[in-house]
Amino acid sequence: MASYEVLMEDGESIYTVLVNDYDSTTVNYSNLFLQEGEGDTIIGFDTEWSYMHYEKETKVVLLKFCNRASCLVVKINDNYTLVNKNLGRFFCNKAFVFAGVHMQKDLEKLRKQVGFEVPNFVDLSQLASKVFNRPLLSACGVRELANEVLLDQEIKPGVFNALAESDLRGENFSRDLIKAATADAYAAYKIAKTLLK
Image 1: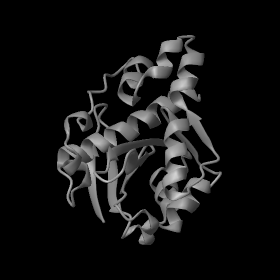
Image 2: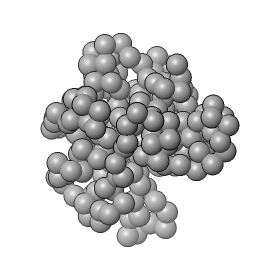
Image 3: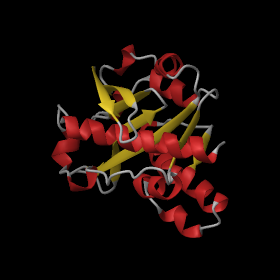
């Protein structure tokens, strides 16, 4: 488990914790967000998916969570049975609202892959298309949606698109990858705070 201080485009400093599913049994996810976020229960949520050479469909490799003060990046390794119950309990905690883009698809894949159910979520792409009466917003990714909803700041394009699968599957993440993961989840959080006012 490693932690970083990551500066966002808007000047906010986010405490980011990177864990993998092997050492995540020691993390109390709910306490991390309640303490660091001073009781803020909206959690920005984003995922990264990757093809496995032996699979025909994508699998989750990263789960990214963020509130106003902290971010958690969870690496999911090949042995999905090791994903622990603490993370499952965090997802089921009805005190939190998980907010992200294209949530239905992500949550269905996550349910199939590791068996987690997420009862309390908001699909930001669908919500934004209704709030702004712009149906095309439902097709936006997190960074594009942030640029449309958060008019006072521009969110730079993600670096994940240019990364090889080995970069996401590797043991160590670069500082740029950690910053990009934090920025994506933070953008989801900021969009949620704007739309759920």
